[in-house]
Each structure stands twice: as C-alpha cells, then as structure tokens.
Image 1 (spheres, rainbow, N blue to C red):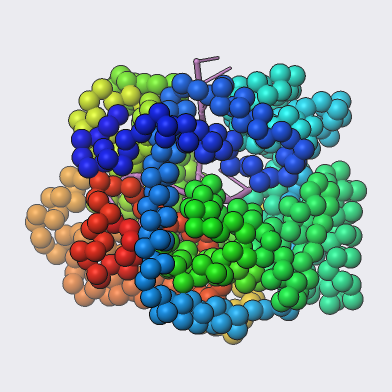
Image 2: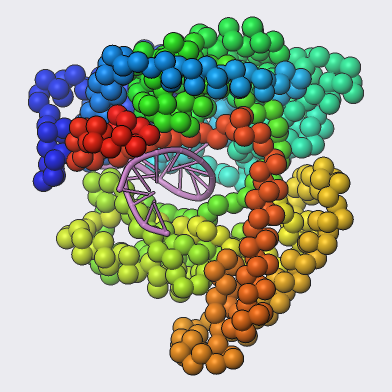
Length: 607
DNA sequence: GCCACTTCG
DNA sequence: CAACCGAAGTGGC
C-alpha cells in the first residue's frame, strides 16, 4: 500500500487518526446527494452507521478510505497555509479581491426572470403513473445503482446514486424497478412541449431539468413571474400528471438553488433585488451551490467557510489557497451573481465522445482484449451517430482496487472506426500491463477528444445542423431562432457556410480518394512526389502536397477556427462565466517546503 | 499535450 | 457477493 517515495510521511496513519477519520469517511460514504430534498426527517447518524457497516472491508470501501486519508492530508496543508498567510501582509491581495468584487458588482443584471424547473423524483413518478399502487410503498428505479427513488423511500435514507444492496439494508421492503429510458424520454418530451410555450429558447439541463427565461412571457402577458410559474406548473401537472418544482430568480445560479427550496411540487422566488439576493446567499451553505461538491465543501470548511456569507471575510486568502478560478467563482457566490443568458443546449459544442463498461474483475489478457474490442465497437457506433472523428484517443481503466488510470495518444489521423480505435488503444493497454504486473480490471473505457466533425452539410458556426431533415422538431425551432439572433451577420454567415460546405465536400472527396490504409500514405510520403499526401494539422484530412493548395487549405482551416472562436467568445460575458470549475492538485511526494524555493509560482503554498 | 481529479445529472 | 455512466472543466507538469 505504502508507496516508496516521499509519500510515506504524509500517508502514515495511526489508529488514532483512523478513528478521527471515521466521521469524514462516513460522510463521504453517504454519497453526493446528501443535500437533496426529502432527507430532512431522516436520522442521518443511524443511516451512515448502517452504510458504514454494510461497506466495511470491501475493495470499494478501502479505496474510499484511501481517498479520504489523502483529502485529510490535503486539508491539513490548507490549514497550515492559511495560518502562514495570516502572519503575512495581505494588503495587496485584499485590494485585488475588493477590486474584483466591485468589478463584478458592476455587471449585475437584475432585469431578467430566470427559472429552473426540476421534475420531482422523475423516473419514479413516471413509473407510478403506470402502476399507481407503487405510490404507497418505498420504491426506486435502477439495478446495481439507484437512479431515482420516491419520497417514501427517502424517508429510510435511501437516495439516488446509492448501491441497491445498501439501499435494501436501509429499507428491506424497497421495491426495485428496472429503468425504462424510452418511457421517461417520451414523458420528458411532453413536458418540454409545454415549457417551450413559455420560452422557446429554453435550455434542457438534463432529462428532467430545464432553465427558462420568462422575461418576455411576463411582459407579453402582463403577468408577474410567480404567477407565470404557478400557471406553468399547474399546466404541466394537469396535462402530463408529473409534478415539478421551480426556482425563480435573476439568474440561473440562484434559480437552481431556489428550485430545491420547496420540493416537491413547490416553487420559491428570490426577488430581483440586490439586498434580497445578498441576504439569501449569506445564510446559504456553500454546498448548495452548483459546482461545490464534497471535496471543495470540506476544503472550504477547513478555513471557516460554511455559508456563502463566510466567503467575504476570507476574500484575501482565496486565490493563494485555491487558485484564481476558484476565487472568481466564490466571489460570484458571495454576490449572488450568475448567468442570465439561457440558450438551447444544441448550441453547445461537443468536446468528446466516449464509452465505458464495468464488469467483474478480469485479469486474463485475452479477455481484456475482447472487452477492448467490444468497447471499440460501441464507440464506433457513437462516433457515427454523433458524426465525429477524434484526433485524440483516451484509454481509461479502473483497476480491481478502484484506482482509475487514463492514457492517451494522438493517432496519425482522426479515428472513428472500431478497427482503428482498437489498433491505437492496444499499445496503451499493453504498456499498462507492463507497468502493472498482474493487472486486474473492473472497467475499460475509450473516449475520443479533439473532435473533427464529419457532418457533410449545413454546418454553421455553432456546430448546429440547420439543413439536415432528421433534426427533431424542438431542436429545429431553436436552430432557426438562434440563426435569427445573429441576423446582422446573416449575409456573411451564409457565404461562409457555403464556403465551408464546398470545402468539406472537396475534403470528403479527397479523403475518399486518399484511401484509409497506412501502407498507401506511407509509401506516398516516402516518394515525396507531386502525388504525396499530407495531413492538415487542423482538420486532419489528407491533402495533395502541392505547396500552394496545401497552404491555402491550412490557412482556410485556421481562419475557420478563429471565426468559431470569436463566435463563441461573444456568446458569454467573461465576468459571469459560471462553468463549474475544479481546482485539482495531486497530492504528490513533493514536500510542501518547495514552495519557498520558487517565488514565481502563483500559488505559493501548494507544491 | 498528458494525466489526475472533481463535479454534475 | 455487491458501488454507474457520460461529459465537462481545472490545474500541475
């Protein structure tokens, strides 16, 4: 267990320490949905005891214990760093923090009514529609792991994300149903049809959650936001028989928090008023904010930040302790700022496509290869469905100890076919087998990143297909509306789109002619004749190596990237980007004294 | 670019 | 007996 490097000091664990860590570990084992609704009446102490007893000794448990130990060490370092900072003059950091806060404040927009709509125990609710008798018993959906459970089950401490055998320990009479995704998708579509009447550009956050901007609807119908939401919720309940909860606020971040406030079948509003917002945030546990998970919660707790109001007094420390992005994020939490722009998810650009599969422990190399084959085939289907090729291929494995490793490679050309995926993944796997003698796996995954679109037509700058007929109806209204939004650039865009399409067609033809076998391109490369083929570093497609044509093409690809970038940049106010962030530092063997050696480091106190 | 890690639903 | 999956993002090196 103990690694040979300098980690030994940090990781050494005495029985006393294990005793101390038991509480944090139990907390960890409770799982991520602790803050979810429906748990208030539950005796958490008893629940965590049962989970702890059910888990003890398993490999999963040991891995969680290890993680918890590492986090505890990390937190001790944070505490020390904080103490050290307190003895220093932080006037500069304080001024910088205050400048940023006032800069943020000037971006505050109170003119919009943003709402977050969340279906109550969605999968369970849909199942109860088909089988009303289930309403009176504790019930959950999901096989190995629960995806949803009804509110009766939550009374027992059962919750989503929990292993079903643990849930059955907590509630032996729990009824478990297999999930029927098509059924939920169909019901979700009914609900979305209604939501679209209130905001045609609404943003689906998942199958059972959405953000809407109802400002226009309120104006047009001369109604207040609460009245509108009440009406919409009634309409949804009446026509789809599913109850939803909603939060109403000036931005998405607060609306999301508010939707949890009166769950189930309720709504909550935080007024578009600076004082009301600040007061609401002041008492709000940081854990309730989207983007603060179990780890960050504990890290913040260690410096005395439990509620968003606690952020302000610590503002001078945050950048050095957690990094710039985390500071900015926390500043927005303190002020209660968030994005007001709600847009269809279809406008987001996909970054990766991947698939993974969990199985019982496998050590046999041939069996592992067979799994890799299978995963490669699954990914090929996903790649063809989403119409992408990947310039980078990532192999992911989970060892029998639950430790996760990833390895990546950049194949000579963008890949999407199972044959290629397997070919380029295999060396990474064999290398791992060499590094880890007797490697046993419980999960294998492949993911393509650095994507190249293989869509043939109708690609605009947002990566939305506006021409293809198979686009579903909701997406279509969104797309056309989105296109209208950029109206001023219409002519330019149409021309550019045509240009891209022509180019794509040409490229498609070229890459067809080029053939796909290694041998061909290799011989051509070595010949270095007029016919030699080279790959464009941007789009990764084969090109005839006529210098002029090739260079023109690369320029074209580059300019296209720039245009895309600009189009994206203009879509969001930098000050209000609210991407959930993660500040991650690996606890390495590097001693914490190294920070004094390198004054250039931004984050003085870590590594 | 590579990798570990966190977070979300 | 027994703990998911897919995607996105951050940050260190």
